[in-house]
Amino acid sequence: MFSIKVLKADGETKFVARGEREAWLVVTNAYEEGDRIVLEYAGAPCYFRFQADDALGEALIYVTGNVELAVPFGEARNGYSPKAFMGECHYIHACVATQQEIYAYRNQALNVYDNHDNTNSYPHASANVETRNEAVFAARNAIDGVCANSSHGLWPYTSWGINRNPDAVFKLEFGRAVEIDKAVIYLRADFPHDNWWKEVTFAFSDGSTLTASLEKCADGQEICFEKRVVTWLELKNLIKAEQESPFPALTQLAVYGTVVNS
Image (cartoon, rainbow, N blue to C red; front, side):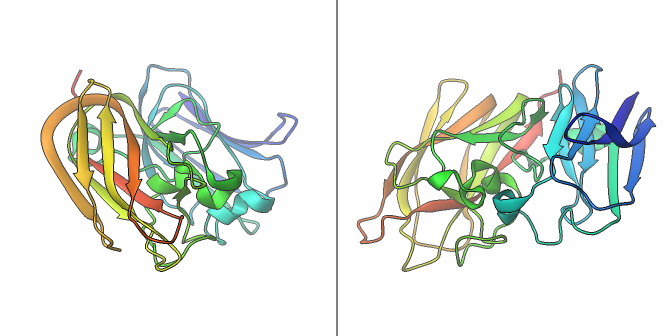
């Protein structure tokens, strides 16, 4: 049994739906500042198909406890579609994922509902620096599935920005073991405003590393490697090209593979 809830800032329940394997919740008024969308789950870790907003679509997430998403207001809204969380009618859905969905070869990095406070669902992105701590430059933007990279700033041109820090590190946690063999990097390509990384290094939880060369390119750049089983990876040692611009950034990172059957 699990629940989908919309809670007020003080914790009072505004709307709730419950299900054994699937639940739908229709919210029939506008969100208020402080509202939270909660997937309340106390069972063994498992995968859910989860849609917190009909404008953002569905995510396949590995859930280890209650999943909370603060409805964004103010500056935080800049990282989302302007249609998201708006209006007076909202459709929220959650369903326990099927074995076929879980074990398919797919992008193991994708999670449009990731956020800074996310501790109970995966994949989860974090970083040691985000430009001015602004929503449009947060690490979560690099795994939301939006690849528009010809500009920067408001959605859909959000990215992970490193605030000119040469020691910037991006971390992607999968929550459990996955076997991966390919990454696709979409550099932010707002040239000539942007610079780009000519070289990046992947550090994996198994102790291995992989250094890859990149080009000045708006298309996704594939990096294929021998299969390895990992629970997380880091993107680090980001070497920017010798250009005047000090602004390299990451629009999207996809990581392909399968969940390890345990």
